[in-house]
Amino acid sequence: MSNRHPSDWIGARIGNYTIQELVGEGTFSFVFKSLDRLTQSERAIKVPKEEAANPEFTRDSHPVGNMAPHEPVPTQVFVKKPDRYSVQEASPYSIHKIQIARTRSVSEQGLVSIDDYSLEKDRVFSVMPLIAGKTFRQYMRSGPVPVAVLRNLALTLQRLNNNQEFGYHGDVKPENMVVTNSGVILVDCGFFGATEYGETDDEKKSLIVTTPRYYPHLKADDLLAFGLLLWEVACRKPLLNGVSYSRDFDLKRVTDDLLDIVHKEEDLGNFHFSQIINTEKPTSTRGGLPEIIEHILMRAVRLCFTDEGKLDAAPGYDSFEEIADDLRLISQEGIHYL
Image 1: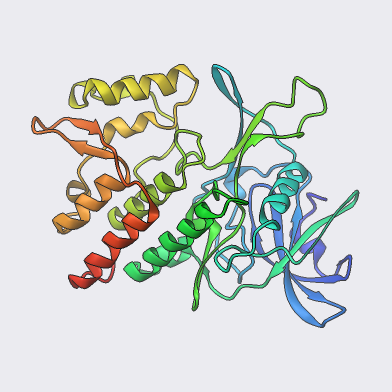
Image 2 (image 1 turned 60 degrees about the vertical axis):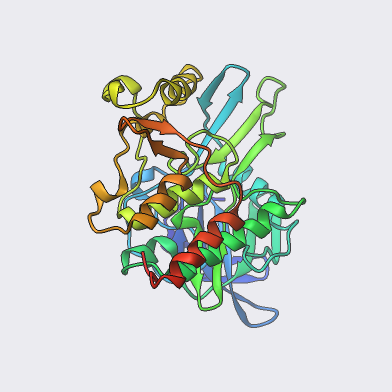
């Protein structure tokens, strides 16, 4: 583990692998292209940092080609106590260990595989295929996103959620998805649950490793994360973006039920969901969106507008299969890009 400059790694050897070039950098790790000296094949090797990075300098973290910096959407770490959430300083080594444990237990074409790893002191790494493709963030920035790609992602998440050994990804965001010729591949899963992360009993609490922009309730809710991603694709900007307080918005435009949900989150110290109060109709954000798209987006983020024009909570989709069916229907109606 090290926080030395990425260029200092080039040519270094870790286990059976020779590092060739940096292909990704995230909050907790570097990802390099490497050469497997035994098979003479190129692999992606992930090396945890000594400390979590300053989000200002993070880039996409995934095993693909060179990337330009962008506005960071960092993964964060929280501890959940009985009546409070609190931000936690986390060791990149601990995060790396959790991701290895979760990923290597699953064999799924839509989730990157861990082919080799080491947790030995001073030689911590994991090895993955070197995937040819773009992150979903890059894909979004290159132009409208095909509905077929979104449907492929929904069906991939459905399979993962139905896998009893896996259950949830936990950090679905554009930086953690690679769009390839054969479909979307997810990397860097999050974590929600008990862990031996701490050294003392007081530190061994329920740990949360995720991105609040897509998991604003700080719960393992991949379905809502997909809905928020879908909104961002269609409206060209995220629905939620940072911490806010309910009192910052016009409370008269929302129902008491939705306001009650927001206040309960704030009472727990979670202010990532509060900005939901400021939601406008998708057609107000991006004119010309078909009504059927607006309906899907509102349902995907579990919101609706009452007959009086107030924003309210709504049931939403029950499964990825349901939302995949709706995406198929809009394709049949001639809407092939969002």
